[in-house]
Length: 321
Ligand code: ASP
Image 1: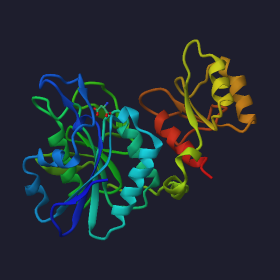
Image 2: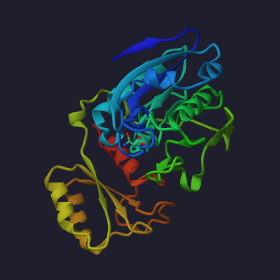
Image 3: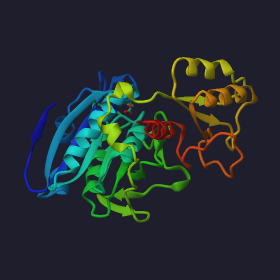
Image 4: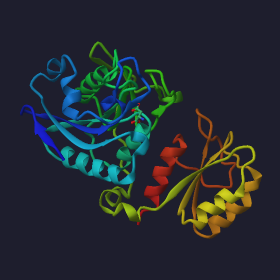
């Protein structure tokens, strides 16, 4: 792990994890045929013009925590990242953290960190849709915007900054595979905007309480984390999928139900059997927006408003010993 310090006097720490923001392609016009996670965090910081003007007398510390394509994000990397975040957040002179991350699973990492970190200091994830070698890369602007947000006195908790918008860890979701503004907070709307380096909040910003099992997530061997899988309801759904997961040892299943949390009839009996066997079940809607209204469902609802991937994280934490 490489740690380097640029200046002293009150710090912002930038943790690099890889992603397209650190990606390189053979040609400047190639936005898809690149390799993510190639450039170190110092390289990314050096490529941001005007960074020192934003920082003024605040020191910047960079640390490379991981170097991966976030499609390959795993629990071991999450645990190390959370441990490094806790380490830095506990230091009195650290005002907040910026994390450079791939876009693919950014929303999951953001929610995991929001659930396990005990700090009101801001932790701002940022990313890019174009590799660093693109003719007009979006990473440097996103990083500069993230820096404006982390330095803002109103910033609290885990946030994501991309394409001039600030999103909460709870609401942020990648909604587009290619365009630069790939993220949305759905009906909740963004927490704010960064315009000409100025932060404009849509309302008060606060850091929610962490999950009761946050200490376990930081300390328990990742191999012992309960396996929680995701099951999507769809036309032609087949109960063999439920049985296969249960037989393979899944401890929890998050079911993405159709519409207002309805579950395909072919799955109901097998899900009920799985529950009797001790498998924890949670229900969300597979709809891209909104949340389940009313308690119609036989299954216990996941915390309202979480998408299926974030509900998986919350159930995994619920099941930690
Ligand atoms: N596959 C990349 C990643 O998530 C995509 C990106 O960063 O835009 O690391």
